[in-house]
Length: 469
Image 1: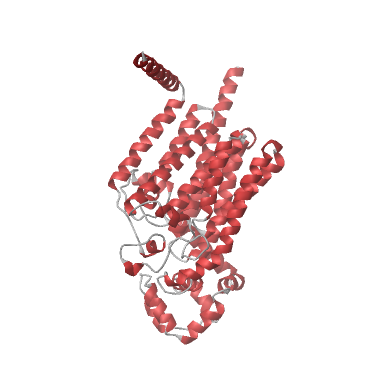
Image 2: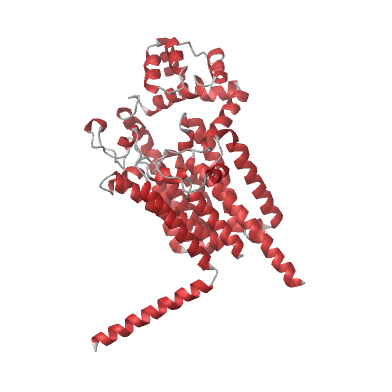
């Protein structure tokens, strides 16, 4: 008797599953399922063929087997560690680097698939749904995304959590889903502690939530609770930042505090590496000569350790650095604004350009990769030229009226990424593509959303015109 009851229950469940599958297959959503399945297959190929990349900085995120690389605890919620706790806490959940990379891969896979699903729901016409979702998944298959997922540094977590935050925030704005808001708040809280510069985005999310609380009373309590939690995160991050910067001294490659190390990196790359910048520093900002540093800078390699050694062997340059490192780049902007703008443009171009550790196989043809992310010379005109066309198209198609949440979310994302990439580029000093990768991907997400909305509105207008005839 019991066996018969179980059999009937199992048969009922099977029929329900089959019915739902049949309804799904008859609907347009089958195309989303096929896209996601193809995306998952490609991501599994990446997982099966990737190798783990670690660098000198990896030890400051996760303890290494070589005890000589470990200089103390890497996880602290009060700043007594070289990094904020976001990435170290994630890595502490896994036993070794392979599992850490697999965890990053899984989080990234879910985040990009979630965003593709959200873009799908924002459009009304099937071709626009397919184009938008497919473009998001293709973006996720760029080699740079996979490369970071298998790199034991903070960038993968920064990108994946950022994608998830944006997807869930837009979902909540469009539907009012409480689950989306809770998921967004948790992801954004953790995201704030992956890198100090992420606070730019956290503050923008807080402003968006506060604006929604003001304009939509029905969402007021939920929005204010979420905004309050992120305000706590931003304040916490700001409070422990100076402590973490001081703790960094024993971990850095140059064995100095974070402020001085960043200054030396910028001095080597941005000043000694760019003659027009160096001319201003020596001729108008009083930087004394240092023949040893000149010899190091003449080589293509950064050679930061050698450059630092020569810097400290030049007492006049060292003294000048101690007196000027806090404000010399601000004075450079005021003294030579044209040269400063040129430097910033070059830095932003490098931050938005292609980059990869080449530790995963390329899934997409190189032509697709070059079109999606050109080299640094074309990164700014190509990226922002396409974005300007997409915005103009969205205005002409009426997307800012008919698809208000999606269009304005994409535009705000592009604006936030622009502000952030300028700030990051002017402070990074080197490896711009690595530090600007979330902004580069964010600008392309905005472009994809706007392009999909334009196509959606064009198709909708044509359908309306055809119906009226």
